[in-house]
Length: 392
Image 1 (cartoon, rainbow, N blue to C red):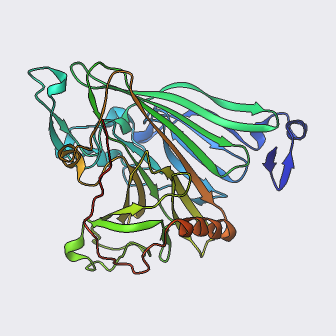
Image 2: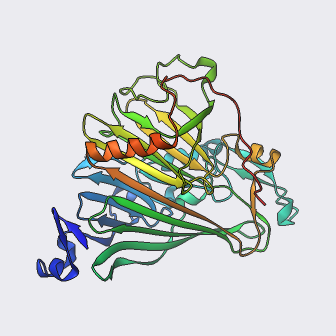
Image 3: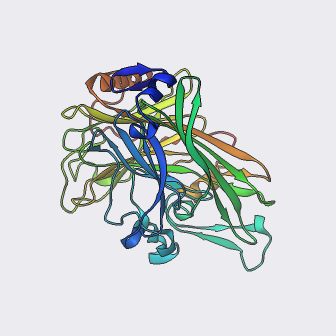
């Protein structure tokens, strides 16, 4: 059954109320036409629950805008939703990625995440390519997708909005990886289901690293907003040497700051009986929250990114295949994934809007039942990076 406007309706009842579902919910393709966004294909999803979000087809099918009943959730940075043709991957010593960094979700990978790294590449058997120079967070986030389909699908009295696409990251004498992405959301729902497959289409054993940079902005993020997570251990903090200098701990968020330096944490998360890890940012004043649910076996690591700088105000939830030790650390510890021809990795995640106090309470109870996070804002990092396991 479809839930719309406080009613539960069959397909026949839904169709009897209008000549097309689009009066309440749907997905449509459009092209942006001005400024640095000009030429980007974008899919707009409306679920009928108050949830609206957009998918940038020409930027890895990442999620840009996100709002619920007019209340913004996704982050907009000064960089904007820049057309990929304007992107300079090698620019600014590898920091050029920042000039395309905006939106609710940016995909990082497919063969590198985190800071810049020079990696030896004997697997490509090519003299002039003895190494690969990786810029911040990899290449995939600014590669256009081949849109393979989108629309609405009825199964009995259930209706699902969906989109699919393939993003190819490839070169001669180098990697040939594909990201197959499917996005689904049920009509009347506040759950965005994300199903990714990263496949090696090439014939070299190819490194693979993967991360989602999921970014929440104002008004959900404001002074007093709370970060909720099933934290078993605070592993690492980038700013541990000056832990309390900026007066911002991991748990309770502050208002925009002047001269704020980003803070990044890695937490070791617990999982529920189904292997799922829910992490949320909630705003009790607004009765609004946003939760990211991932699988521990797919994303064993989780970062928290705080950018409270005025004009760039954001909180990042970042599930990752690897520790913050980066590409070099993953290699040294034997934790770098390598994919042979035809081999793939799957990533199944759910992004959920928590539209009221009851939904926030349910999410908090779910998270607390897994693990009770530290009550203090400045728990001492343990420095214990647990082995991830066999990544061959």
